[in-house]
Image (cartoon, rainbow, N blue to C red):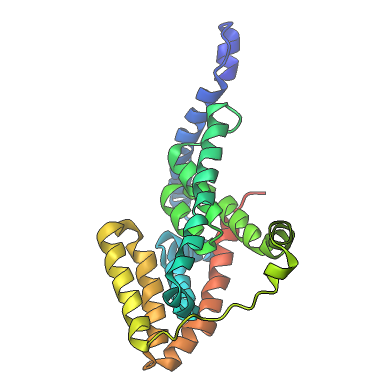
Length: 254
């Protein structure tokens, strides 16, 4: 397109060219896949891992079930005001979305709105959520988003300490936090059930992720399936993480 524009003595629209290439890429990939099938090639083991683990969305869901089984909501139920701390973390998501759209607006990097939304979830510092959402909205960015999200999570121990020291005094950092009250077992069991119902009614698109999270937490708090809860927290989540890493790595381009 740029060559044709030069022949016609026209200034090429770089932004339009990038959008055209982005729209044409899925079609070209589909044609190449059909050509490979016609020539007798079959998907390899990594393609199978990707299809089962990420293409179907199973791996992030299973990991969320494991995270739910490892989570103790006792401190949150004892002091609901701490919910605001978690809510404040969501500002990172919107800031990242706006940042991606700003880069697109000034023509520095071309991002569509779904791509910007998939990139924005990196601001939540949650790897499984980033993989699940990018697989739905922007599969072409899945590898880069997954690497960015997990790198961000790995760097948190290096990023947090200087910020904490800058914003708090030594006396404040030595405050010993105690649980305000004892949370009953009934409260801990009802919380994931009520949470799932609210999410299913208000945010049905997020119901699969939060549903698995609440199911894992319910296994932990019910106390009647301790063996299964222990398996989900340790063995199962580690195995799925291995296949998830292989699947994401297969999507990366050097």
